Image (cartoon, rainbow, N blue to C red; front, side, top):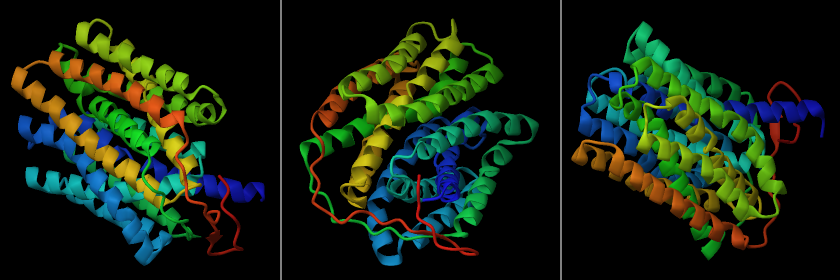
Length: 384
């Protein structure tokens, strides 16, 4: 395998992964300024992406089996471009429907990427960079123009990814489906609880800080800092996941920063908002851990493992996020929702321990073949 082949393959994975989070983090960054989103719509908007991503993940193996890998990713990217552009063209109905369609597209893309990435850090690093960009760029666009521009600009990133993808030819030969097992179920719950905390941070952090008296610009910058702190973790954690012998210790280590950040937001949110934001961002290393684990195990099992873990996991997270939003609306404060988040973090550690205690058994299968061809040149292998 040549160095040029590896570079091309890594770039493709990286560009696709960048588009997995801006649709959500841009929404969280702009949510306090979206005129068509009242309290109820805002609560639904934070939970909605998780349900849509969960349902979309279940449909991915079916779609891939009928139209192939390349067309499946193409459909996802085209859907993402159209939905991101369309959700800013009207009122709350357009926003809700567009966000749903965008997240369905993200679900398909996100379910395919672990298999295409083969554990590459380009996957998690691109995801982290997309999260950071969505949080960092959107507030600036909102202040200089409007919330419509702040959200709609991310359709351009999806369009660029589609142009890159159209220059490739990738077909995945998936091995047989993996059967359900206790570690696979624990991994699903672990993913769901991690996603609950991650999406709560992306959706509610600016609101929590603003309600505590932090200026809007500072609150938006704290969200950007949180996403930025996740970047080095997205790069480092995949390697740690392969090398650490005590995986339970790694699960605990990655959960500790989130415990610190959430506790700070609960006790004194305005006292050190930058510290709490940095801690919650560092805690996103847990997401890199579980995504890398899915990717590595999917090489032994199939697309169905990725679909099950992400599909059910995101549905679990959707209910967790909605519960926290409902508690905030009902109590008028963030204390009770944040206490619930601390309980979720405890469950995250427990489920993570169960998920890594025994490897998910896989049906013996033919190794995955990932040929990648550039239309203008020869047909190289994918290497990431």
